[in-house]
Image (tube, rainbow over all chains, first blue to last red; front, side):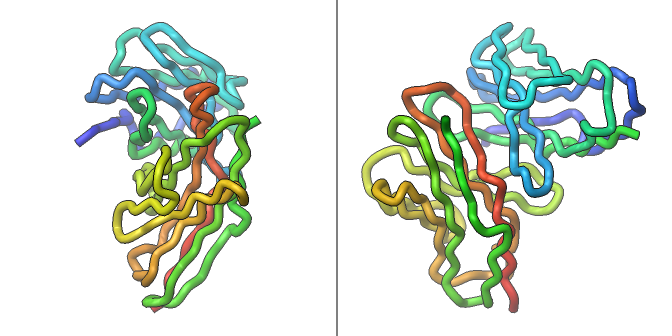
Length: 111
Length: 114
C-alpha cells in the first residue's frame, strides 16, 4: 500500500512563527502536492513539485514556500504564520498519469 | 481554465435508496476525472477514476460513476446507500494535455439516514 505520512495531525502555532509541515511518501512518486482545505472552498492547490528541487506555484501560493531536497519528502513552510492560515493542510503524491494518494492531513491553528 | 462544479453542498438519502452526487467539469482537452471520499478528520481516499474507454466506471465500496462528454458531467452513483457511506465527497479533474495539477470541486456532504 502507498503511504503518505504527514508529520503532525494537529498543530497550534502563534502569529508570526515560522511553521514547517512535513510530508513523506514511500513509493518513489515523482509528483507531490500541498493543498489547503476550507469549508465551502474545497481543496485549493498551494504548491506542487514534479521532481527534486523543482516546484511550481498553485492557485494560492502567497504566504507559503516549499522545499523538496529529496524525492520522498515535500515540506510546506509558512514564513510568518497568520490567523488566516488556520486550515486543514493535505499533502498528496502520485506517479505520472494516475490518481493521487493523500496523507491524513494536518489541522493547523494559528493563534 | 480547468474547473469543477459540485452544485449540491449536501445530499440526503435514506438507507437502501439509490444515491447520486453530481459533478460537472470544464477542461480545454480530454479530461482525467476522479472521485475521492473524506471521512471526518481524515485525508482523502480514492474511489474511482475515468481515463478513457467505458463511460461507466466502477470503483471502491460499490460506487460507480458515469462519464458524459456531451454534458461534461461525471456523476457518482450507488444503487443502495449505506449509513456508513455518510462522508464528504470530492470530484476532481485534470487536463491530460496540460499540467500535472489536479483541480477539486468544493465537495458534497452525503448524509445517509437509517
